[in-house]
Amino acid sequence: MARGSQGEARSSGRRVAAWAVTAASPLIFYLVVKAALAGVSPAAALAVGSLPPADPAPTLKYLGRAAQQPNFRADPRTLRTAEDGLASLPLAFEPFFVAARAAEQKGDLRRAIALMEEARHRRPSYPAVRMQLMVYYTKAQRYREALAEVDVILRRNDELRPLMLPELTKLIGDARGREALAAILATNPPWREQFFDAAGARRLDPADARDLYRRVRALKPGGDLRLERQLILQAQASTGDYAGARETLLAGFPERERAANRFLFDGAFRGVSAPKPFGWKFEDLDVGRAEPTRDGGRTYLDIAYFGGRGVVLAEQVLALRPGRYTLRLTARSDNGISSGSLYWRVSCLPGHSQIGLLVMNQAGPADRRFAAPLTVPAAGCASQELRLIAEPGDVATVVNLQVSGMEIAQ
Image (cartoon, rainbow, N blue to C red):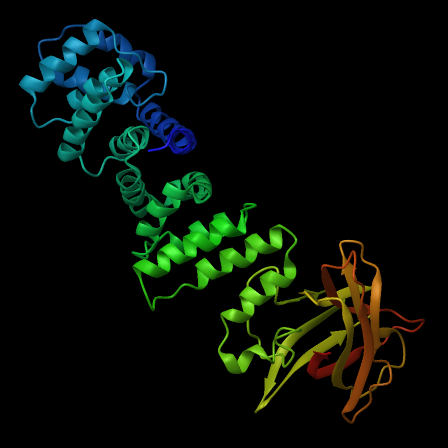
């Protein structure tokens, strides 16, 4: 291996090892707290460990819990107690756990792994054993084995997922970490959706998200990869590439749906959801609401506004490239709009400068087609927001409006 590659591998290993230690700390702390609540204090455990009772089992149970602490240090007497337990209590996991921590502190990682694997063999359901093994495997650059231990912990301990999954997502930034993650994610673990929720909250390199997608796809061809594709979209959006994110979104649609959603998502108001940051966001407030509605074969946006204050009732993020467009829709209002105003406003992000306005105040009992021009400038408008805004008039009146067939055309 070339020197540069060796240095890169060492650097990568350090990053993953740092993740492992970080991830381990909350769990070990959690387990120590549980032990304390059970009436076992770490200080008492260490104190008992210094006594030589006739039966080593109680001492080893205390030591086993104390050894779960990150700052545990094995002195010669503690180590002798563990060694005695290896002979007298061959079915107990505590002697192997304590002896493994002692080997770790001496820098003998190979022996620490072997001893902790024996502890796992005797107590396979114990989270602390698997977490320590995860740390050891990571330090030894045995990443698939490390994540296999994490998988078991996450499957069996729902309460640990909020602690561990944000840390686990850090592996997406490491090539070997992605390889190991793909092997686990391809098995559809029960924590898969929560993992992608946590990953979507991070700022990721889109290239890393694409690589994870390709690796998972190779392991489960034809499988459901919507979450992996959504992560690419979110990574692109987080870097400001909204147009690229939109293309990623459209690539996941059936071909017949791509044209209909090219510029505006679900303009027919069928109630279809889309991953963030795209898709509709509808409000249901004390002064008004907007919600997709179906009446037989007709779908539309049902809007009710009661006045009192100005509000945003619906919104969507767009990713229009520079150029000229037209916003079109059909609207009707049985009683008309006699006071106040309802309109769609298109603005650039992040500056919120207006580039289009479509007012619907002339809506009446019959369907009426409305249209307004949009011009997206070449600079400072990588994405846009489309908002339905309701503003009160001089007289408080209830406004009901139906909007259908909404589209943006170039």
